Amino acid sequence: MRVVAYSIKSFEKEPLAIANHKKHEITLISNSLTPETVSYAEGKEAVIVFTDDEVTATVINRLADLGVKYLATRSTVTLHIDQDAAAQRNIKIASVPAMALLAVPDQELPFALAKETILNLDKWQENRCLGASCICSRSCDQVKPHTPGHE
Image (tube, rainbow, N blue to C red; front, side, top):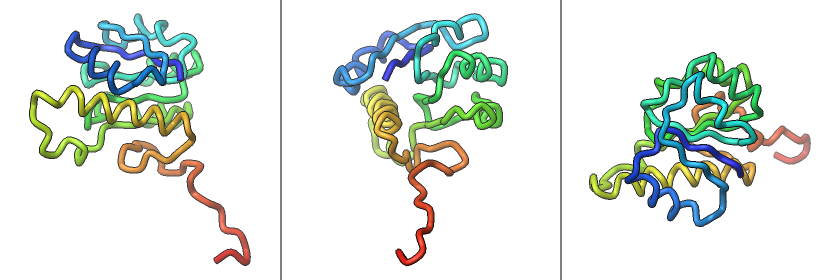
């Protein structure tokens, strides 16, 4: 999957590279995601953000216009993301589930966040449900339609 990660700090580069195992083509950018920097997402399927990125309806619409389908945050919070705009533009959102960070020492936090973020990309690429990481309508393709006679 082609991905751009915004607001990357120097201490996050190695954990993301290790967690990724060269599976996804990730461009790391230190700039935050704004209407002025959204163009870096051109040609990407997914965008990774952090709490410093204000993912407004304007930004969501520009991302959708560029073909972005997925938005992953390297945090447990999603207040910085306009979820209604993302739903309207059919962009799926994932966060790091808080339970994945329980008992993680501070020095290991960048690795834990990176691991969960890459796991979300992996699941999207494989068309799998994200479970607790999913921040959407929960109407993913994993919901099986009822087939008569197959109770």
